[in-house]
Amino acid sequence: MVDIKGEEYGHDVVAPSEVLQVVETEDIKGNDITDISQIERVMSPEELEKDHMNYDRVDKELAKYANAARIDISEEENKRLKRLIDKRVLPIMIFTYFLQALDKGTLSFASIMGIKTDAHLVGQQYSWLTTCIYIAVLIVEYPTNWLIQRVPIAKYLGLNIILWSITLALHAVCRSFASLAVVRTLLGIFEAVCQPSFLVLSSMWYKREEQAQIVTYWYMMNGGQQIVGGLLAYCFSLIHRGPLKSWQAIFLTYGCFSVLWGLFVLWWLPDSPMRAKCFTEEDKTLMIERVRTNQTGIQNKAFRPEQIKEALLDPQSWCYCGIAICTTLPTSGLGAFANIIISGFHFTVLQTQLLAMVLGVVIIIILLSSTWLVKKTGQNLIVMALYVIPSFIGTIVLLTVENKNKGTQVGLLISYYIVLSFWAAQTLAMSMISRNIAGQTKKTVVVAMNFVAWATGNAIGPQVFLSWNAPRYFIAFAVHMGCYVLLVFVIMFLRWELKRRNVKKDRLVEAGIRQAKDERLVHAFDDLTDVENPNFRYIF
Image 1 (cartoon, rainbow, N blue to C red):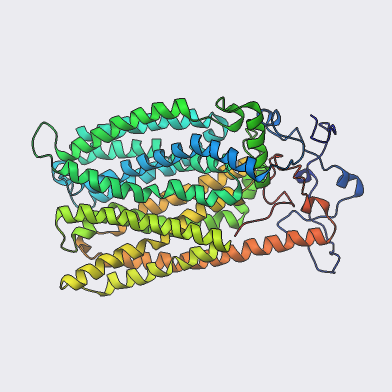
Image 2 (cartoon, rainbow, N blue to C red):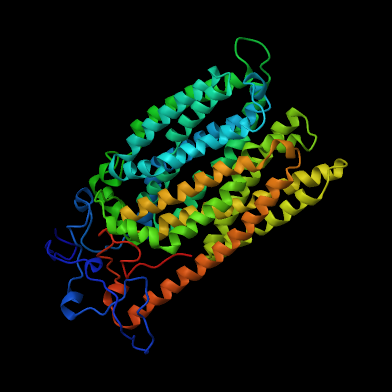
């Protein structure tokens, strides 16, 4: 392998992760730097010379295209490459996530179209139809993440889209709680691939500073499905004659269309920059080079058990889990019961469907504005905390104000809308996983942990909306208040923890550890974790 300067590097080099140990030492200012997440040490002169890419750790497919050290890409060239990626990859993520959100949200629209009566649902059975999806996700999340790391990701995604589309269409023939529970569980199994795949694709194709925006683009399709889903649901609700009920027609139509989309994804989406036949060989090399600064890698099929241990012991991993539970528990309940809650404010079916569309606009505004603020300020976690404040205010109003007249009706509706501002925390936390977790095995475990927590919150969420507590659901909103309080504490702790780590790694630079300030980024593709790599800095 020859780098751009013509220097040849062999395969006998040693990556920093293989020699890093904790030792007692002091930096040049006399400050103790021993407790730096098990990465700090003083290296010998011989070891400091071994600062070249370790090809024994680099993915073999990636090694064919990766340069030995960083090369500069002009701003104009960088924009050209991003445009190529945006045209090929971004639309797939956005529309696929839109379909998945639409598929999940269809049950909420069907709840006021007669499915509860036709399927003879009683008590908490409707809530369990949402919960069983996430129980399925809990079971298959790690196997799915393990497969994502090892199989062609685009093909795996396309196959699962087809399978969940067929499952969605089968909802139309279900006339009992048992049959609906089966198809909902299968839907959860096949849809479990979606978000983890998109986090991997976002980190594979995009730079760290771009990823918050990219994750927001596909995640805001939760709002997009509310808008389009509300309009389409209203159209389907006009079906009063024929062999199919309105709720049957909507499931069948969405399922058949999604199958066609799955086939398109199989054909159009490349598995990785290295396998993208749609790009030239030179562009493939440059696309890999532009994400070198991420230092989170592109792909690596090697299984490293030590990275599992690190993932499980890393407080950062558990903070992301905490954020996931505290945001998805309210989200799933508010999503599954959106139309029921709004209709409980004494709106008609037509008004409820249309107001659900406004809910989607609110979600999109929340996600876009929070991402814009992050881009302007560079403060991810502070913005997340600020966007929890309206959730407190809205929930307090829903708990304390009784619907007595037109004025309180409008006020309660607005309060319900602003409660959803905490969605910003959920989206930004997901983008932080892709930006702050390095090492492919570790990333697989952390993403799996996050979505297990995500599924746990989603599974519990509908259960706190007790049928006997309708229509105001005091217990549910009280639980949500507890989630928001815990969420703020987790966000503040995570900020303190990441800032502390960056400060301690900066002390390595002051102590003269060259690997802690490597502008050539020679170890960017060595499958080092964020803890193992002294040159890695966290975004918070």
